[in-house]
Image 1 (cartoon, rainbow, N blue to C red):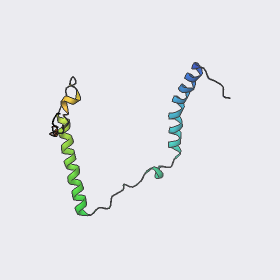
Image 2 (cartoon, helix red, strand yellow; image 1 turned 90 degrees about the vertical axis):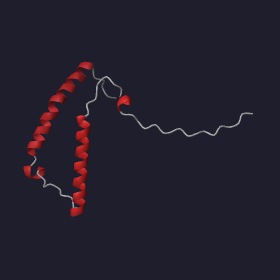
Image 3 (cartoon, rainbow, N blue to C red; image 1 turned 60 degrees about the vertical axis):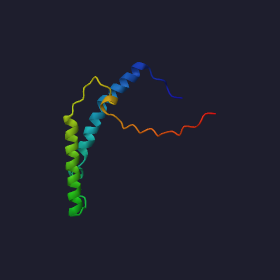
Image 4 (cartoon, helix red, strand yellow; image 1 turned 180 degrees about the vertical axis):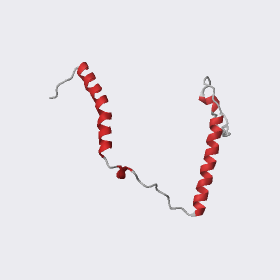
Length: 99
């Protein structure tokens, strides 16, 4: 059965872990050789047409994002007022004759 630790012991262990974790990570990073961390960039194998389409889509996405960033949102409004969802049309219900 494991020993229960007190609140103070837990605080000491948590503080020691918070201090030790970055130090251990820094020493492990320093021990790795630099050539292993440097990798050549990966170039996807695309045809010129595919690459052109991808570049067009990326440019289109950047324009859309710039448009979104230009639109300022007031803090006091609810999201439902700003982003109106499309409400589906109600179907005309067949009225049944009442007996």
